[in-house]
Image (cartoon, rainbow, N blue to C red; front, side, top):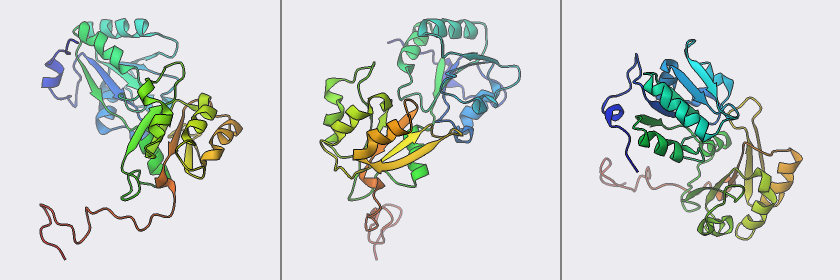
Length: 272
């Protein structure tokens, strides 16, 4: 793969103007207050904002300057989007490609980066908060609780996009980790069946619908009720499932060694 032009990476994003380039920005799960400071600054300066209008709320676009050209892409294909971004940059304009969540997760960003690199168009990626992070914050839980769970798995069940055989849900569920299940509401019965092969039936599942949006809903149910609750509330898209031992309430004894008085390290030598 051809690497993007290094010109963009050699110069920090200016607080007054942007270089002609594509800025692939993570908009987070929906709440504009959860954008990074850098993402806000870039949105406020961009000449063109190409956004996934089915997933990015209008409140995020309110940060754009009045003169910015806003281009929705819900009805477009990659063959429409990428040549248009290339043409804009070659016309000396700065372009934001605005994705929901974080660009590194289920954002179809890989093929966009390849195409931009092949065309020698500089680009930069600005990360965003993912839904699983906001879910944990809303639920007021840590997903890596000492002596209980120390691994987080982000995955999905096979749908129109097939999951590699080695990453099938039943195989990943065997780890009994904190499992964050994306893009699976339409196949929730199948997902529940595969999870029950390894998780206890009463394992808590947080069903998180449109996190960060005004109509956000979060329901915590036993694993055995996961499919029923999804169907009852008619969740068919923009739904994250969080399956984790960390959602149980009885782990008050668990404690990290990091701040324990008997744990010494470079910045806190000795013990008491």
